[in-house]
Image (cartoon, rainbow, N blue to C red; front, side):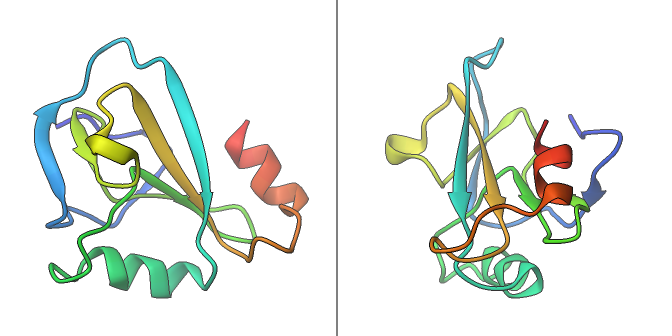
Length: 105
């Protein structure tokens, strides 16, 4: 299992493809949760949702990991094995907080 040592593990989630990531990973793709951190974590844990991301960053900065970095998350088109996906808490109309930017970096 490949876990980020400074992330809070909230997985495993059912919506992922075990294995399949192409290392070294070439991209990091940011998505906006359009909701709350806890709501997104709960949604990822629902098998009917058919969604997931590797990481989530809360407004106040904590990093959560929902998908093993060796597994393919379902956030990218075609289950992209070349990118880690990062969901940020908030809405598309709001900027990232300073804490989120620090964590993302």
